Image 1 (cartoon, one colour):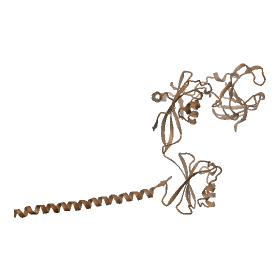
Image 2 (image 1 turned 90 degrees about the vertical axis):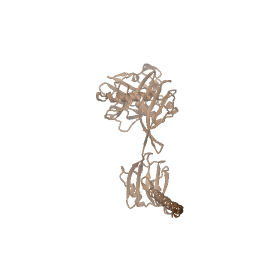
Image 3 (image 1 turned 135 degrees about the horizontal axis):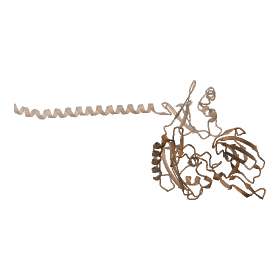
Image 4 (image 1 turned 45 degrees about the horizontal axis):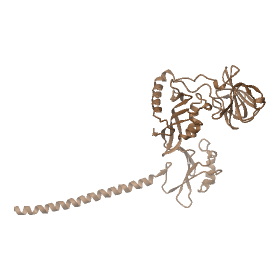
Length: 427
């Protein structure tokens, strides 16, 4: 009996092992099969859900191109079997919804069309910029909707030293023309950019936008330090509830009552003087203004808010605009080639508004702007005007502003002196 029991043990173990292998293999096969089915379903699901601009692409193909000069939307859609009636319907869409007249050459467009020989367009997508797009669904009726790509905000740092001009310094440091313009706007009331000197330097912390890792536009300047003639001027962005402005270390606004100059970039060819040799008349007489040499047609802007009190021909001054800013201050812009639209006596203008174009009318030897400044009717040197600042940081915002200022000062201190883009941080 005992021998029979011990004889059956190996048999039982063999049966158990066989069962384990069988059921284990079955479980493994079942698990693998389930994984395979799940994977197959997932791939199918991904294939079905694959889309572009929110449009499913099953049984469709995608065509991408850019508008050529003088190419119309009708020409593009006709190639994709879109009927004249549908094209006409697009042309009659409300202008604030989709305006065919605003389609620009070299701007990209996408057509999603049927996957057959006719290639009939299902959707047309226009991208006026890297962020925004407009989708036209083409069917019995045209449907329009607007969208935008997810945008990343990247923080950048740049520094540089002026050798020839601000423009060259920023570009040599890895910046862009847009950054030049933005920085000039920030300091327009505080720095005379026609008087920059070699050795003047700057540091800037700013943001740019990116879509799928590609640059998609300028963001804003968050803070800057500009050292001009040995004096450092801070610019800290802060919003007191009325829109972003820039303030200095003490909380005073960098925005003055008047801009430093009526042109953005140029050079001073003649200064305020009570005895200057006139280039045409060839004898000495007072020159009670500042001449800015600039190409014909260069934009001239009002240095402050005001009312136009003269816009017309003024003898030797040529075409002239005169603006009264308040009871004390008046400015004049001489030798203009022409006036901007809407500029006439009685028109109100805002600071920085385009009012005219540089010319060489009247007694002039070449294109330039003769800019004049009057206080209580008496001409004064425009380069020596020191107008008061706009509203400083309000009392209730001081604690928050000074905290923001201190953080930005530390941030600027981390920017290396070398003129180059240093870092990119996703915000």
